[in-house]
Amino acid sequence: MDWFKTIQENVDLLSGIGSDPTGGMTRLLYSDSWLEAQNAVKNKLEEIGMETHFDEIGNLFGRMEGSKYPDETIMSGSHIDTVINGGNLDGQFGVIAAYVAMAYLKETYGQPLRSMEVISMAEEEGSRFPTVFWGSKNFVNEAKIEDVESISDFEGIKFVDAMRQAGFDFKKGEQKRREDIKAFVELHIEQGNVLENQGLQIGVVNSIAGQRRYTVVLKGQANHAGTTPMGYRRDAVYAFSRICAESIEKARAIGDPLVLTFGKVEPKPNTVNVVPGEVLFTIDCRHTDSDVLIDFTQKLEQRINEIANEMDIEATIDLWMDEAPVPMDANIVAILEEAAKKAHMKYRVMHSGAGHDSQIIAPHYPTAMIFVPSIGGISHNPAEATKLEDLVEGVKMMASALYELAYK
Image (cartoon, helix red, strand yellow):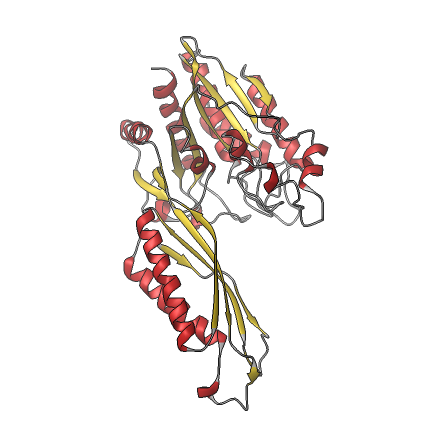
């Protein structure tokens, strides 16, 4: 196999489906371009002799039966949807990597002992509808119809109508858990700049960071900017600034892998000559250790209330996401490390600060991830890119791991 040619051709093929006129990719769940991309993947899988099928909601599967242990399945893949005006590697390259690695293994070694399966998951990003991980949650039977049956996209199109228009529907009745899956490996671009900055080719992911997200509203009193003395003000922006600066300094003191972000800030009335009486802001905090994450954020909540009380300001704190860290399977991580060492790759073991389908799958089946470098750490952006040689090394790494899992 010509690795460089094969990978570039497959990236180009899928990148032409849903390319955005303004640059980048827009391929949203149940859109025409999404369906076209899934069918393009289906055709590629069938070209190498895989049996393919869609499940009820649109996850695509391609299967190569094992010769000795057909009821043991080694799986790889990722999601096919994109963010709006995103890059051409996030998600889809994990699908490409799975297909190319399995095609190489079949071409080189023939039928595997254990079955190998590619999954191209319907949705991960939440870019069209206010739901995430729809593909992987359905795969592991965690999806809830009530979470999506009344939601709509930004054009008012209902989730249910879009799904049925694309030819899919909700799963019917109680779903039996698949017992055949013995390993799931996902390849993904890093979406950060650690590997690039350290001159490394491969990241072996041993955990996915937990996340806690908040929306906080501070209510003071809007008043005249010229006639209200400083000592009499109930300034919501000043309260926010104290909370933000103090919390970030504490996070910096603790250091990696803790990260803290105040990403959205909306002051009211947001005009030049009025003391702001209200601020809405968001908090995103992540760490790989659940105890550290909970301890830090609980102390942050306490400090928000203390500062608000000191300043005679009302604070409302809404913790709306609380995702625990997800460890990867130690055995598969060890297999990935050994493959990297044998190939003399420059690698490191690392955590993922971003969420991935693997975090949904890992509690159910042995799971691990491979990262390849992102140029400049850029992702969810038309400028998202990875050197072709790094993409090749990632797929070779995937092939080595799948060989160990499926052929031995």
